[in-house]
Length: 258
Image (cartoon, rainbow, N blue to C red):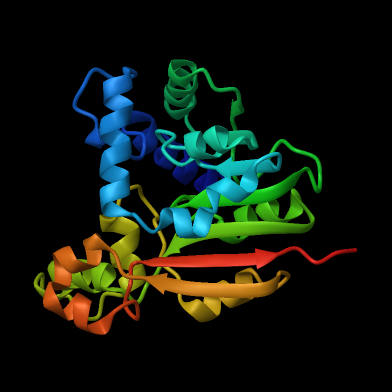
């Protein structure tokens, strides 16, 4: 049962993203216009060109796909374009309104609703694929949200979830700025991320923690991915270390057949 503190934190997370849906800051044209969404999409492709490798958009045609946390819709619209039977949820009304407009602009059909990742409003085994990119580390109980993602996945269905990695150049850079240089070298990476990365309580995970959290899946693969955000903090060091200290940790797996 969620505590009052848990719900209060979730409300603050919701307010943060209600004011600034993920990706929307990259749009300079009036919000909701085709130009606005085109600017967002170009920037997302520039910063994270590897998304398609994990989301596998073309292979979702005709499949029941759920995206948890649609943000401004740059990934969600690609599922719809590919011909997926796409459903998207987000904690914020702002994101749902934005993505509805985006679908209308392109004449695409999909299902959208405001919902909490920790308590998804769907029956068990309702989707062939569940996808979430950079979202579930923001909800207070990430493990519960992961459990919900697995619950609504059909046997044999595929899951792809990106979460932040605690041991990454981004996390180390934030620690240097907000702990070491402030005279608090014993402050933990987890505490720094919770207070200085996007919404309150943001988490980063180790590969071992991810293996434990997604242990019920078969063909489990966890890949660290080096990002431009790592290179912004560590420069050439990030290039030398490759994906080892990448900010993104992508977990993929398959729900066991009955």
